[in-house]
Length: 142
Image 1: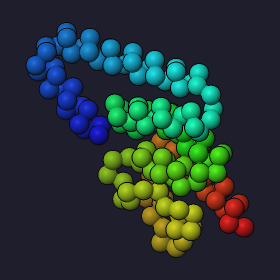
Image 2: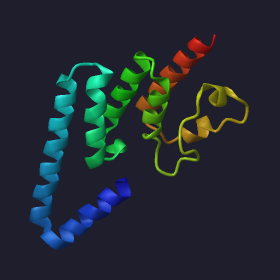
Image 3: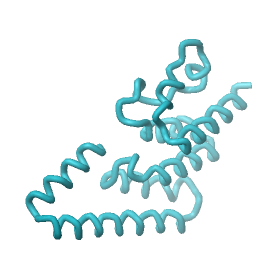
Image 4: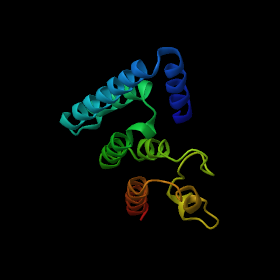
């Protein structure tokens, strides 16, 4: 998704010209900031966030809105929707990660787990959010 966004922006520069492309980039950034502010002001309930995050996913790649996806994963975790939490956090794995999604608790703790390798290039916020997920799933398994 990020490669597609950067290639589309470079092709837009070729068609529009440097000034028009710069204004378009500024406008896109302003929209991203406005969406981020709206989510911050939104109630902290999963049922309020889910349609908003799904709508945003149509326009922005999850890695372009990491803060929102981590918050959404946190809301999922706190409301007991652990599978939705895991899949939301999995969308934030760096491109080219050795695994396609973060494993569930049982697989993450097993021998030969690839979690450490997958999280090598990940943002510290993602690693922390995944650690919280693992903590909650371990507490529920016990």
